[in-house]
Image (cartoon, rainbow, N blue to C red; front, side, top):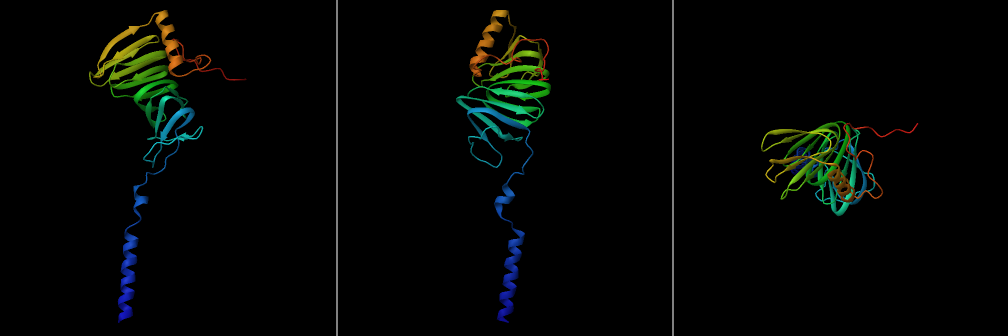
Length: 225
């Protein structure tokens, strides 16, 4: 009878183990396919899925939806999406990838170049464009800016429910409260000053890429024969 009691206890404990799997497995986020690749990361970090602290990434690390790229005070980075969109991040910038066609700019400055549709989320609203190159800077305590370098961009301002369509060479200022404040068409001197600022801000060492100029339509870079 004593042996039967011990055997029953072993079965009971075994049943408990089967009904309660180890907790770490239940807490993990399912892995997803990469949607982009981090390039030229200088003094930057990535908050990966299943990670609580950002880490310094290896060169050309794949990125997934939900992962965050953070550049330091003197850092820069470039994200190449599988949709052919390309985004350059300035210093002190934080972005979270959402899909192959969208990411959220939480703070800082970014240039996005894409031959297809893409979408950029911010605290002040949503910027969408197709076949365009757009510069966006988000400053929670100061004015934010949207500047079109190529193509056309649609800016949806959330707080005021206003849709603004910008053409190349046009700049839109947004107040810290998410209200469009001023829309301005740049003259040639103002364009030159903006290009100098962009070159310095994004640390383009030699010259600006061919897509970072003011043109009516986005033109893909020439392919080698």
